[in-house]
Length: 215
Image (cartoon, rainbow, N blue to C red; front, side, top):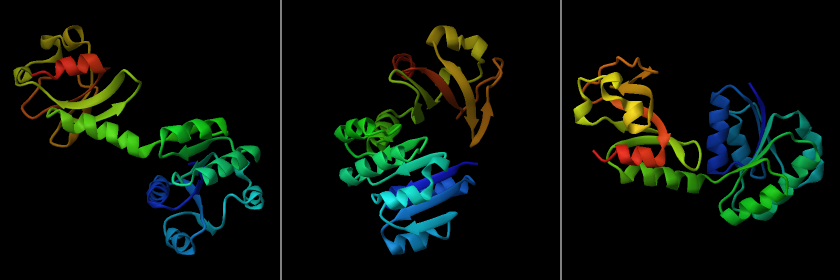
């Protein structure tokens, strides 16, 4: 369980606060809007009305005691810059900042942000991969060149095992799990025999995965 400070209760901030609370973290949220703060009281540990650009407020919070501070107001670059700088000045160990433009990321990192997130861009990248290929059902980016994909299997695989098919040698891919009818078999045995409607979760380079998907 972590102690988390989240600043800004727009749609993104609200959803993140709810998920963090569902994961049983201690969450303190701050926003200038009294209505949003009152609504948040039902699902977070604590909520306060306030302007996080106020040094006195940040100082009073004792931000050095939070494991994670999240700044979510991507629409207001000036406020994000001021809050990020204040958090780091007061000893916040890790500051995560949401951005809405690539140029904003540069300024916020220079201002002390430990990491930035760009949800719109990340979701656009995911949707482009997911919906541009009929065989892909999900994917997670691991590096600029490698990702984890959930895909269908070729019909020719049905009735065969990974050993029969020589998956790693032939395709340069690692199968991490098999999903069947919603159930997941993690790290399946090399002797697992593929069945109709199986999905596989595989790890590989984008180049090798795209080559594999041409079935």
